[in-house]
Length: 124
Image 1 (cartoon, rainbow, N blue to C red):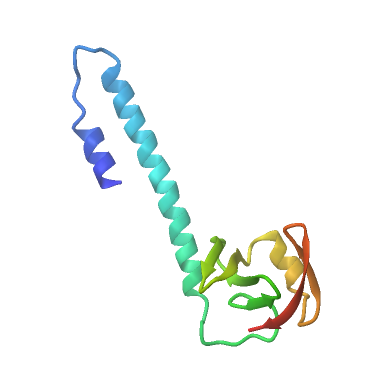
Image 2: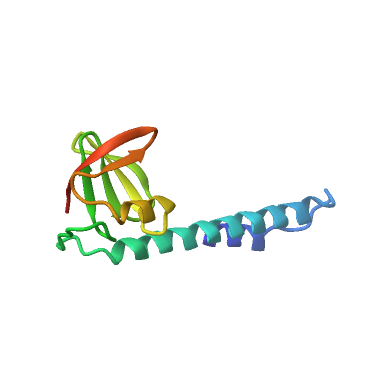
């Protein structure tokens, strides 16, 4: 963001006419986009920092790891699929619509995800 702001500040008028205004406007748009990305990343970081990794959960809540046969779900922040030690883990935000459907589930229950049924083996 600083580099973009510096670039916008040092843009000078030239004989090209509107090039100056266009360059400044494009720089401002890029700065705005970076600000939105920063706010989103800070929100994700806050979600992750609210999870106690040492706490074991017996029900689905923020910080729960839901283990199924072929897939695992981790309720923390919406980071998507991450492969870890050869196992796929889907990071889901507690604000995601699927979380409300998962919150009533227990070990042995089935969940429908990615057009497939998965049986919950354990919840940590």
